[in-house]
Length: 407
Image (cartoon, rainbow, N blue to C red; front, top):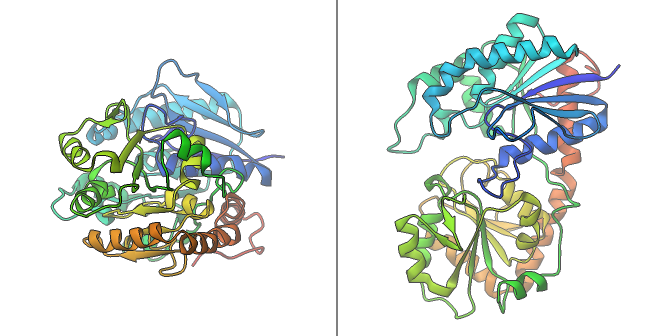
């Protein structure tokens, strides 16, 4: 009989294309996880919300998987409204489970809003439950930001009932152990698909973008926590070679229009940098790969914790990364080996390291290939699926003695 997992990811639809909205690392991770654990004999049902009424209620995702979109919609940037929707979504989820007639062996929730629904299903059915907290508010708070106390209480409560927690890197486990030291914590690093991100000929991208030399690249959202604005402001103070270009991949259609940013602070910096910067906007995930592989170096100026998918994808593409010492960047870079790490307030040092590599392609290639080798050894989607499957087996009691990756 097929072992079946109920993955709950209400805040992200793993089938979002990312051409009109920013595609986050969690969407990529959940999609690749769902696809690859099926190779280990798991059937997977992914519960998410219907962000677009034109999208079908159900859609296949792999030979043993499907995405089910609940009728409720999560309003963007309205966390308080999510609390009021949790009960209705829990009811919808339980009703779907009953009508589907499927037997689920495990629940795996991603992020706190999914955890609220998983909590209710776990209580109603007794099915074992694994929770992935993903950027807990108390952990990701930046100086000056208001802390949502209600969300903090919910996130801490959600660490009281699960059978286990799965995190992406060790530093995430610290706050969890402070809340519930007895809760088993499994560390399962994210994985990259090496058939999608690999070394490529840069020529097509350079010709398409009218570049005479490989650019420096940034891939990610444009929100302040990502540090792009701070990095751009520092770059604007430097004397740059004529053929230097920073290529920015990311942003929604509301943020980037016709190759130009909409926000006033980004417009001001772009006008100052002129031809030294190109905004490409958001694009489907697969379309990002050729641009990453065409870069000389990637910058990751994040100002707070992140998943770091762009870091791993850059390394898989043979491109070194210069980033900040924050969780999700520092976890994937070996300083001085496949990239460099600097402080969050050290944008001049970040650009010093990035420009040194940009000016020395031989060294950049050498470091990039070291990173590529590391990803192939440790951080592919195959590794991620194997480690997550071992976690699932231990929590459900199937294959309990085969592996021990928790602590």
